[in-house]
Image 1 (cartoon, chains in turn cyan, purple, green, blue):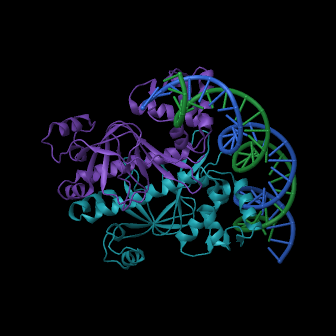
Image 2 (spheres, rainbow over the protein chains, first blue to last red):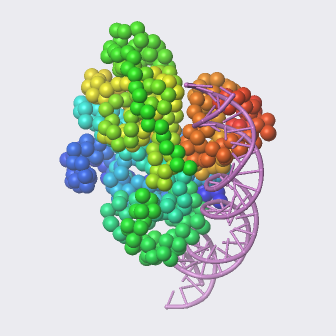
Image 3 (tube, helix red, strand yellow):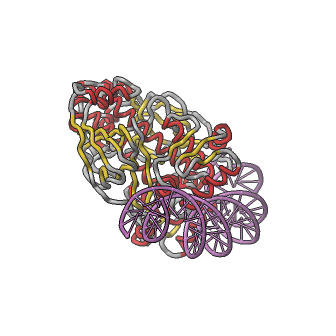
Length: 234
Length: 234
DNA sequence: CGAGTCTTTGAGGGGAGTCAATTCGTGTGG
DNA sequence: CCACACGAATTGACTCCCCTCAAAGACTCG
């Protein structure tokens, strides 16, 4: 019931760079879909082990983060002990930007992950010189807001619709059309969708029985009937 | 069931100004808690009648809005006809900023309202000259994100907790400690909290029976036991 | 005063939660 | 390499909260 997150704040700094001069920075910039993202080109690459805390709720928000490899979840603990997973972040996604003074969420590495960490001061200084940085910041914030609004819509729907939505979203975000890799546990999914692990499991089974999905092991799912799933979410 | 929003796009422009020279602009700036908010000092004051559409979902996001008097609700329509009210905005609140290219929500005036409308280009130009504008933008976005996250936490709670949370929040935002004026209908409240009007009505009755609140007419509620309500939300 | 809308109240049903037991999967140590 | 342990995931039975449907009551405004 009380899903306490593992607090193993083990962090290993692997590589540092502050400019585009190093090859790693180049590859990071190339990974970006929008080439001219100034924030993507600076920062420090940090390696977090599976389950490691990246930042905690209430901590001062000093950095902006970007997933390079792996996966990250942000979460909040509610009074009754429930854990709400606000968002999963996959390679290319920014997070930690939404905070103003202090973090409203905690962030944990779902898997071993490489995260690009950029100081907010560095970004703030950049906004004075380059006007497109402000636009990029607002674009990231807008994306975050849009996503939260989608999630709010989701929480008024049925379990089946939530699961379908989640699977479709994961398939879109990971790029593979009809094969979904789930880096997170059932508990993570349940806490994200506002369900219980039992309901998640039952609903997945139901979708498999109707032939819309095909489970390939516990954390790999093939989306057989993309049309039916999409229709369910509409 | 299908809660269709009234589409009465009647809008009356009452006053225009683009600088601080006019007295209305001064009063708007004075209303602001943070005196040095650059956005609050410019724009055009528009009057919207009760039920009027301020902008529609999918429309290009050209302006940023600020409530001066009245109340505004932003909403989205889900596939099954349900309406999700994303947020209520009260005097002093900004809205419409979260959109990137096009509005993700529709906005309607709950009551007759005066809205300060500012062109995004004007703000964008200002960011080049004054660096604090970017910070203000991010502060508004952060506030919006925090609020959405709170609402997500809310939607996993019971009806009683949602109602209590809503009443406490409204009392905080309107400034009056234990007297809540509800400018919106039961349907609006229900669509905001992810409940039905029947459940809203029943839950309010239940809270009144336990003596924690005291209804003063349909749209005025006295919060008798603030401690108990706060404990419920925790 | 009356038509329409909003709100309240009641009865019944369904979907997800809770509790509990079993199975599966992974890593560990003998 | 196998046996064991531990957690993760599945499956089942039962309960409860909220939704649905329906009708009556209260309020608003012409």
